[in-house]
Length: 165
Image (cartoon, rainbow, N blue to C red; front, side, top):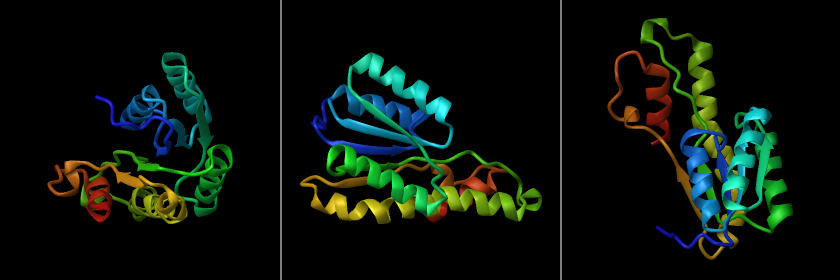
């Protein structure tokens, strides 16, 4: 399926594996300029090399912590400096933090919300002016059904996903 993303500029958080990497690969196959963002540079480098190898399209890999608004702003600035704008933002960063309510620490709860909720807000906030300038600006927030119907023992993830929804 071709969604006509050729020439578009996309930023994908959590882009080094799973859904984010699959989105980056799909967009690259259509000729989009893709920046993948995650915390671990080694994983990013490997993912970018794999996508480049399969598609022949340049992939920008940027190591950043989505819970740090200054780092998020830097990511946006780097992508705009490289490609002149942003057309697509995919907020995909996240983990599957699990714990039963009675066992969940405050630190675990805060970390999950910071990554999945605040991280998405920071990305959207700093990308918004560039998305508005695009003729086809869009942002996508990935989540799980657990935000509406959580399984037992998934309180941190269920809470942050519900907040994201």
